[in-house]
Structure formats: structure tokens, C-alpha cells
Image (cartoon, rainbow, N blue to C red; front, side):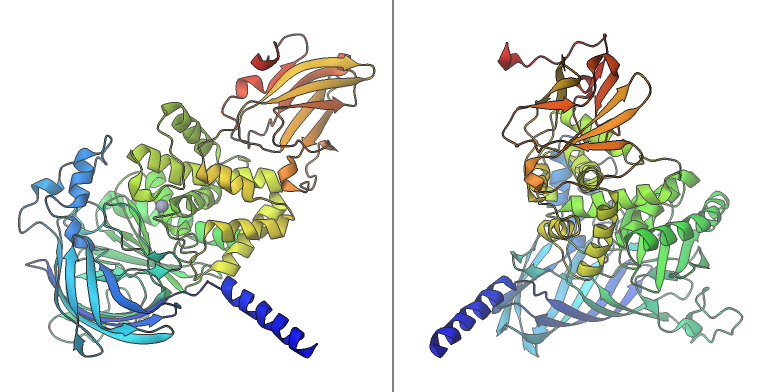
Length: 615
Ligand SMILES: [Zn+2]
């Protein structure tokens, strides 16, 4: 008996371990770099402590060498010159870079725990054969000396862009690739998304003292630096010669910075939130825009803190980088010139990335919709007029346009591998945003926002997967939801419901509903009677196994679930046909129904949808 019990417990504990695959690797970077502002070259010393928390023995490691993308003939160059709809900022510009304009990252030496490692450069990826394998649950120290040339800015990183910012130092150091339960994520850089290892950064940057540096982390020596970092009203004691800026950032996945001698530096405190630093070029119009943007930035932080969970760091920097907008831990680089609306919109989007990428660091190459889509969702809500009940309208329109374009691909596609930039953009940004708004329609508003907070609090400083998100939503709603994730993410199946025959049956009305698209959804039909009364008939799909709670002022009637295999459904309305003014499927338009022309019935006027298979 005892023996039997013992083996039972052993089995149970083994099964438990088998499920526990959510280890994550960890890095501690200590870097000293010197930027020569006449040659645009960086000399760097990198000490990397790498914790192998995986159950695997690692005989190799991989690094990203992003600057190598900015060379004629690189994969980014070829991709941009051969894709049907290239990014207008890139086009063939890489192919025209001269030797002193290209970017590169060269490894000068690399050793592991004092022993030289052998390495090979493959474009933007460095493959390192380790002299000693890294055993599970051990750490190793990798020391590298590197030299880099900062490219003329093509996209994101680089120097001397069209807005006049001297250095946008993003993707600027050899960065260890992430290794997780899916293996190595050593992607060639072709201008899209990133994935990084969680850890700490201790970075010392030495350059000409006229330059103002802004970036990730907290400056450790503000009284030596000045440039607006010092405690207000205190004296700055600067050493002679070049200045060394010392930043520390903890629990981040990357480190970015920018430098320019003409940066203005403002600071504003978010109540119960971070101190926000703003860096922008001292041009009249830019200064005016960036001053006016300050209260908007404060509002965005307060709104996102309240709705989606607390921002996890004490500081944040909004930096004019002069090219589009890109999110980094504790900072963003955005364009600086442009209208207040334009710059603020970009700022709000990049700030929202502090939640959906810098805290919830999903693999954005594999799941760009969890990064760009969730971010767009949050920033649209943060910037919406409080009277606007549907700030996600634009995302739906964008999705419908994608469907009509014929370019749609499943959003489970790897970000780099979409056939067109357009399909990628609309999939990542618009379909990601619609995914959430439509989920809100399925589970109800209360469960949805509770789920968004629980997701944040459960998964921040980790790398959540799509299933982790939907599991949280299942827990808060009590509904089965993986069908929704699969249809929206893995397929290009569409939603299209229609109202068919409407007929009288004594004191009741029968409404034929048709599922024309293959994508099943819970359906809401709003009945408006001639006396102005309204009722909402809720037809759940049987896949959810539960109904969402009723809400709102319109009386809700719960119909029996619609089995997803059935193309039609007959809805019984407890009211006379003669009393009905109109019927409409989902008048809130939260369901991404690709044909809304067949969603309504108006007494006496409309021709109902005829099912071609039931002549
Ligand atoms: Zn974004």
C-alpha cells in the first residue's frame, strides 16, 4: 500500500515538473564604451554574465550584430529592394552607403571565463562556439571587445538623420540572442522586430562633453554630468576632458541611448508615477510642440497606470530620435518635428509599449500582434476623447481594408516573413487591436479589464506566450476561449453573420440567422419595437461553455447556444412581428463582421439574406 502510494506521488511530481517549462535566461551586462564623434566609431568593452536557467547544456551562444544590416548587399538591403511595398524610409538607401557611412559591429576579442572562444559572423548574427559548455542552472562570463561604426541613419539607429539628431544609438552593441523553450531566436535583422534576454545593464558611455546623452536606465553621476540631470539648484562638478555617463537599468531586455549637443532637457513628474524626461532639439517649433506635449505624456502615464497596471520603473525618457518611433526599456526615440497631434500620437504609442513589450516582453518577432496590437489598443484608449465609446473603429476599418486587399496572411506568421509590409503592418497593429476589442465583446467589459490587469501582474518581466494571455482571460471570464485565439491568429477565416427570413409565429417572431463566414462568434441581435423599446437577444456560441454577464441598459434575453457546426440558427423573439421596427446584429460593431450590409432587418423594407444552399 505504502509502495503504491509512493509511486503515485512520484508520478504526480514528475508530471508537475514536465509542465514547468517557464524558465527564462538572464543576463548582466557591464559595458564601457567610447564614442568618437569625429569618426563615428565606438570602442566597447562588454562583460556579460549569462545565467543558463534552461534544462539544456549550451555548447554555443549567438549574438545580434544589428549594425551589419546597414551595408550594401545585406539581407535588410535586399529585402527592401525586392519587397513589393518597401518602407519609404529605406528603399534602396542601404545599397548606396559609402564605406564611411555603413554600419558595422566587429568583434575584436571574445572569451568565456578567460578562455578564447571561436566565432563566426553570419550577417547580423554572431555564432560563438564555447570553449566550455554551459551546464543547466550555471552561469558563465563572456568578455568581448568590439568596435562599431555608427551608420548614417536609415532606420531607427544611426547618425545625422533628417531632423538633425546626431546619434540614435539603438541596436548599437553586440546583444545576446534569447534562448527559450522554443530554442534560439537568432534572427537576421531585416528591420522589423526584436526579442531580448531579461537582465541588468551597467553602462558607461564616454564622449565629447558638449553632448547630452539620453537613454535607458538611471544616471548614476548626475552631479558630474549636469545637462539638466543634476538636482535642481545644485552645483555641477565636471571633470576635465571627455565626460563619462554612467547608467544603470535593472530588469530590462535592452539598452538604448541617443546623443546630441543641442538637446533641450525638460523634466516632469507624473503623480504617483515616473519622472518623465524629455529631450528635443532647440528649434522654435519643436520646442513649442514638446512643451505642449508634456501634460499629454503625464495624462497617458496616469491613464495606463490606472487601466492596465503600474509602470514598473521610476523614470522614462522621451527622446527626439528623428525617425518614426521606436520603443525601448525606460525610453523611446521618436520623431520630433511635426504637428502636436502627430508627435503626441507617436509618443503615446511608444509609452504604451512600456506595458506591452518592456514589461510584457512577448517575442515580438513571433507575436508582433501582442506587441504592436496591444500597444495600439492601450494608446488609442489613453488618447480617446472620454465621450468616444469606440476608439478602436480605425483598427476595424484597417482590418476590413486588409481583407479586401487580398493580401491577408495568418497573424501567426513570423514578423519578418510576411510577403508585404502592408500585410504585416495591418496584421500586427490593426488585427492585434481588434483581437482585444473583440475579446472584450466576447467576455464583457468587466472581465476584460480585470484580465488585462491580471495578465500584466502575472506576466510582467517575463515572456508571455499567446496561450498565457488567453488562459488569464479564461480564468477571469469563466469562458473557454482558445477557439477564438486559434481562429483569429492561426487562420484567415472571417466573421460574417446575416439575418435571413423573419416570420410571424402567433405572438412570437422567428428570425433565421446565418453564419456565412467560417469564424464562429457569440451573436447579439438588438430588437427595436415600434414603441421604441429595445431588447438584446444574446446567442452564445457553444464553444465558450458560458455566457458573458449582462450589462448595459438594454434588457437582455439569453437564447440557447449556437453549435459552431450549424450554419443557421432560428432565434425566437418573444414579440409580435407587427410590433417590430427593426432587428440588427451587433449594432455596437465590436464584432469584426466583414459584411455588415446583411446584418439588419427593417420592417417592410429590407430583402432578407437568402441562403444559396436552401433554395
Ligand atoms: Zn509600436
